[in-house]
Length: 166
Picture 1: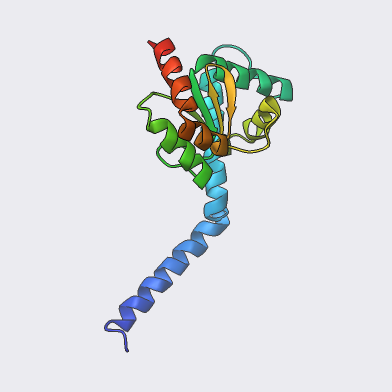
Picture 2 (picture 1 turned 45 degrees about the horizontal axis):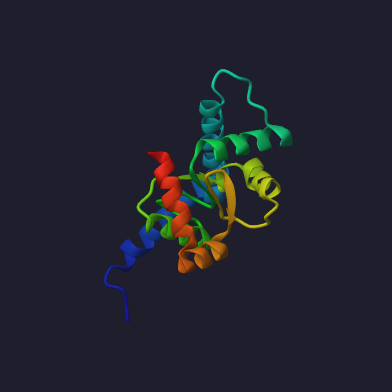
C-alpha cells in the first residue's frame, strides 16, 4: 500500500535522523544523557543532604549515610527508580505493596547513586534490590515482602511503624 504522503514521511524521518545525529556527538546519546542527569541529581541530593559538613564519599562514609537514611525514615525502600516511576518490576511490586497500606514511606533511587546501590547490599548483607527497612530493621526484598504481605505479618509491622510516626 503506497503512503499517502511519502515526501512528508521521508522528510520527517530525515529530520529526526538529523536531530539524533546532531544530538549524539554532543551529549553521547540518550543513555549517556540519562547517566549525566542521574549524576547531577545525585550530586545535588548529596549536597542538600550533607548540610554544612563535608560529604564523605568513601565506603565508610556511604555506610554512615545509609545508616542515617534508615534511622531517619520509619519506612524506607531502597529501589530502582521512584515511587512514581519504578524502573524494575520488583521495585514496582514493593511500591504497590507499601502503597496498599496507605502509609507515607520514603524511597531511595539506587540508580542515581552507584555508591548507595552497592553500599546498601553490603549494609544489609543482601544481594538484591529493592530492600525494605521498617523501624530501622531490614525486612528483605520484594519476594519476602510478598510472603509477609500475604501472611499479614508485614501489615502488623507497618501498623506499628505508622503508630510510631504519629
